[in-house]
Every structure is written in C-alpha cells, then in structure tokens.
Image 1 (spheres, helix red, strand yellow):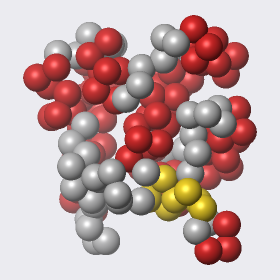
Image 2 (cartoon, helix red, strand yellow; image 1 turned 90 degrees about the vertical axis):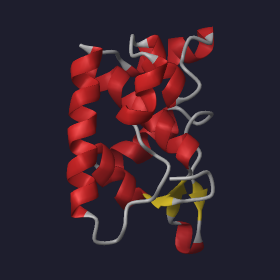
Image 3 (cartoon, one colour; image 1 turned 60 degrees about the vertical axis):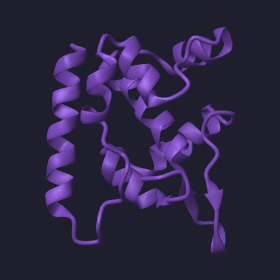
Length: 131
C-alpha cells in the first residue's frame, strides 16, 4: 500500500480480522486518529496511515488487553506511536526488521490468496516478536 492507495472497509476488516462494525465503532471512539475518506454513497476508504493506526489500536486492545479508555489516555498523553514503524520499534522490534514484518509497499492483487497467507504468517511472526 502506498499513500495514495485506498482500502475499502471490507478489505480492512478482512486484513485485520475485525468486523466492519467494530471499525465503525473505533471511528467514533478515536475520531482524530481514524478518519476514512468517504466515496460515493458514503462508502468508507482507508489510507495507509489510517490502516497503520488501526493495526496499532487493534494490538493495544486485543493483544495487550488495554481498554478504549486506556488507548484514549495514551492519545491524550501523546504516548501513542504515530505510525507502525515507531510502534514496532517501541515494542522492542529492531528497526532493521520493521520492513520485513509489515511489508506495505505494494497492494494485494485481486486474486492474492498467497499474499494473504504471507501476510498472516508475517503478522504471526510479529506477534511472536512482541511477546
């Protein structure tokens, strides 16, 4: 994904394994962090920066057991990482491995089931490194 590549809410939902209604709820809870672009008919489209913030929020809520209020406190205090690279480095992952854990330089092809499997394996590796 480059900065001008947009993902639909359905694509983001699948990539994060989070229901679309949860993403819409997070939009309401974190309006300054999560602002999707809306297209025709009010469809939501997410930029890379927004997707990265969603990855961080999901990790904080699901893997680290934080509450919505806890994440909001991190936001208020300015302790929430600004992007995925900062988040992975702050989590103890070396800067040299960031690119290999979250390769976001190219979009997934329409029939990219191999890409999805690779992404899942990379996310599992990232989770193991963070634990």
